[in-house]
Length: 104
Length: 98
Image (cartoon, rainbow over all chains, first blue to last red):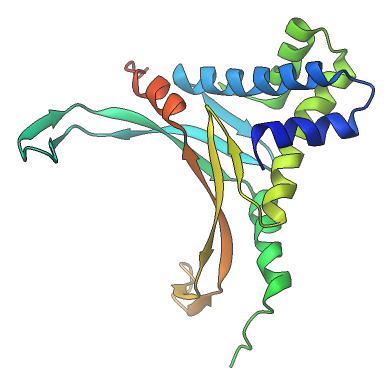
């Protein structure tokens, strides 16, 4: 599913809203989430999961072309931890396809 | 302090003029559509933000940390998030810690 599929799916269900409004709303939500992370703020959505930043310490890297060492500074990377409902529902998919192995 | 659904709905109300109920439903539906896509086994790609992928994990040995008893962790499907280039670049620029 892509962003436009997501907009489409919501618009179908919210037929009283203009398609354009749904598109703007989805973009607004994503921008607000990106902005929160870019300013070091966490995101917490019950039943979905939480986003936070993880620190990556400085390290020596290599230029793959020349083999030269380059110092890379520390940085933050976004991290997502799925919430309980999302974990259970994502996993339910596979359980339907392959029944759990018999416990011996 | 963390960003929550209530704040997201507030923003839709302020900036797009959705009424409070519509704004709340919109935020709810945004996350629900992503959950149901993943439940159906389909990855979700949100360009500029990142991808929610599914990974199959094989059964592996585990342990009850309280009792020390060995119990296998069953095979399962898990959700992983891979931030996109744009989000990574924006977050990397964040330098100040408290």
